[in-house]
Image (cartoon, rainbow, N blue to C red; front, side, top):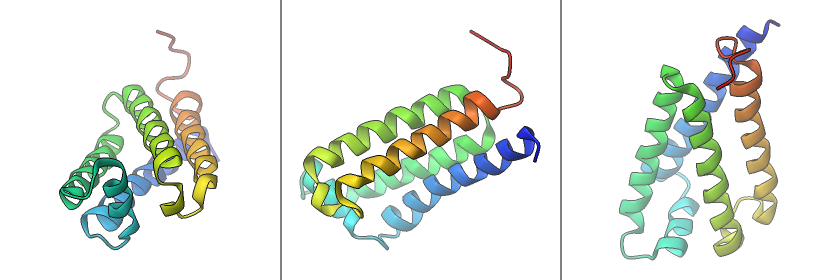
Length: 130
């Protein structure tokens, strides 16, 4: 398979991760554990509101990914957001994570996948160094 085709497929997969986590898990609250994590980190008073706002932000991230606008900035933003979110969860709410502290391994794999897709596979950015 050509790198360009892989890049397109992987871009859709990455966007799907953000969309599902934002819409299904947080906005629609089909995975209540996400709100519990938010309550643990930010406090219970406005945890539902914050969970919805985080979910909407993740949906916006998915849209941004699909537009391919400023794709390198987008990839760096994803990497930072995933690293920060998972670090906070690792320290403050490991008992609420699907795989406990092992979640950090999956976060690192996702970060690597985002990096690989944008900085290695992206056919429009190959050979461009800034």
